[in-house]
Image 1 (cartoon, rainbow, N blue to C red):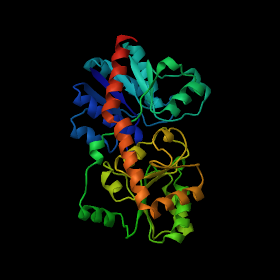
Image 2 (image 1 turned 180 degrees about the horizontal axis):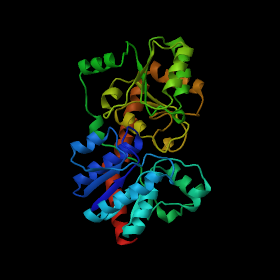
Image 3 (image 1 turned 45 degrees about the vertical axis):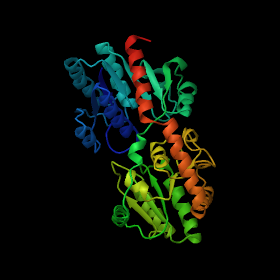
Image 4 (image 1 turned 30 degrees about the vertical axis):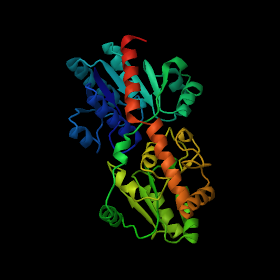
Length: 367
């Protein structure tokens, strides 16, 4: 099968990682795969796996931007030259591009909904979801039906998945110590988060909780991995809270296994989350998780079994949950083992690929 995957960009983030993982696995299953996007640092991964990347400037939030029209014409020529059989779009803008490409070429397209959209009238009228839309969690599926009026028969529920084997990789103490030095960590347990630095990820609630935690356990280190528009505000808050010596910011990385291997507790205080790929990765690495009970996170984290679910925007609850795990190492390890088993049984990347492939085949057959 000749498949064109489309996403807005290939910078670090859940959608980009999903797209790249999908491309790699589809190629392993002997499909011909291309990825179209505005580019980014994950292009390197595609190149390493000999997956062609078509650069189209679709980095815009507006479906009416002239970039969209230019992308349509560029990809139209490519699709006809290569004989593409199916398009799979990952973002709203690429869904619009895929819609018009499908109309012009008569080839089918599907999309994946990775999160939550504001239920604007335009999104209800001009749906652009394709022949099928994959929801990455049950919470996203409900959102599609109730808020965006997508018919139930058009939706396929396929949870995100990861390659567990990648996260079973172990590191020597020397490798861990070297990374700790690289990100300026001192001694003491590490509480970490890997997420884009944006308001919706709730970093400020972690920082407020950190202030309280340090009054009880002054050696705790907080590692914040990611980049984004909220960084300036977060650095300012760190200064205001006077916790600069214990809070460390680090750049995003292609492989998260080494950073996760030095953490004791993983935190995700999001205000909204489709599912949470970095939570899956932390669980695969055997870490206990403290996360907000929003969106599809409940599908991953079982409260009191693999971690704790807390109300969003509650730094006091966050503090208490983190401290419980730091004080009870045996319980933290039990939570980590349970989470790792859950990832293995319910969130396998191979299962995801087989289900997505099945959707492709059914769409090509017209049902």
